[in-house]
Amino acid sequence: MDMNGTLKHLARIFLAGCLALTASVSSLQAATVESMRLWSAPDHARLVFDLSAAATANVFSLDNPARLVIDLDESRMDTDASTLPLDGSAIDAVRTGTRDGGGLRVVLELNREISPRHFTLPPNDQYGHRLVVDLEYPGESAVENPIDPIEAMIRDQEIMAQRANVQADAQVPVSQAAPPAEQRPAEVQPAQAHPQRDIIIAIDPGHGGEDPGAIGPAGTREKDVVLEISRRLAAEINSATGFKAVLIRDGDYYLGLRQRTQLARDQKADFFVSIHADAFTSPRPQGSSVYALSQRGASSETAQWLADSENRADLIGGVDGNLSLRDKDQVLRGVLLDLTMTATLNDSLSIGGQVLEQLGRVNRLHKSRVEQAGFMVLKSPDIPSLLIEVGFISNPDEERRLRDPVHQQGLSTAIFKGMREHFERNPPPASLLAWQRDNHRRPSGNEYRIQSGDTLSAIAIRHGVPVNQLRQANDLNGDVIRVGQVLRIPSS
Image (cartoon, rainbow, N blue to C red; front, side):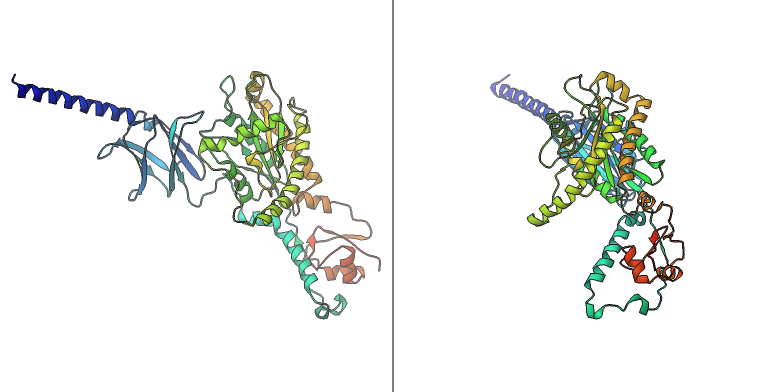
């Protein structure tokens, strides 16, 4: 071989080596989809791609038929997408293939309208690189059985009406004041039925979906145990007259911490309880605990450690859970939070004490008083809230008990009994329990229980007393009365 031929041959070898090296480097940089996971919620579905390395994604929709296309650059599939649990989701089928120009294409065939969003997440303690695709369902509720909006409005209507009457009376100038009731024609003011609404309790089973929570020595997942206990608690609540339960999570899917309290607020909840199963680095700790929010720091090192652990749940799901009131003036922000948090925190501690007492009758207590810490899920300034750790899933004996349906039922019964005792003593306005407390008394000789069709003026005439005296004796600011209300009849 002459010199030119030798050089050409060496050049070909060098070029082939460079191409092989380039292909090898490209192969090393390419991401592999190692697994795909899907969770279906009432208002959304979450599809997670577990990746061997970071990858760039392009997500877009196509019509006729409805599809969502997910393109991953320099990526390949190393899992079977046909095994995804599609039941209950907006996805009918999943197709995968190599797209033009290289890379991976995943096509989701859809059966309903969706609003997609996607983001990538770096590795953490539980997972590696991930691409998260959320399929949100416009107009759908995040809870399985949302309360009727009209029913929800009843919560505040009576109080607002009473305040409006007081303000209106206070603003009428003396010169324009209405004549005495005796000089006015009798008003036809039918008695209004008392709302007698249910007390709404929002139950939040902790964790869910890609966030399993703590895992016990035998593999028991916190998210599964607390969902079972929460469902039993909801059944207890719904079987009691005057109460209604709303399950914030009624399946295996993920919700952000702030979204959980927002859902409770949307449902006009009177109380919010988050159910968890504790864990620690040592298998020895055991027992139930009750936590309320602290505005000034944790009441113990255990409470602080637990709050830090639970608050990290949003990092797993890629959600910014920070509470923001940036649109409010700084001084106003402080006043609003102080006014609401003081009242709700006092209620939270009161309910927590009752619940802790009842839990102590069915399980060992880890702490004998209500602990406090800065739990993100409890930071709802207008709803009394508690976080209950039903037991230590990291303790082998307690892990076994937490899986036992009988023990689960005992825990749920104790939790509701504690809540019920509080609300029977301190029922919310317009609730059935408030009506029972105010009106289920046997009228004495100088009392009258209002019947359907009664008016204040007719009652006054029947008992021979002036209307204004009847108002004064019963602290009435107007002529609005309720069926079942007991009026005190002043002496004529």
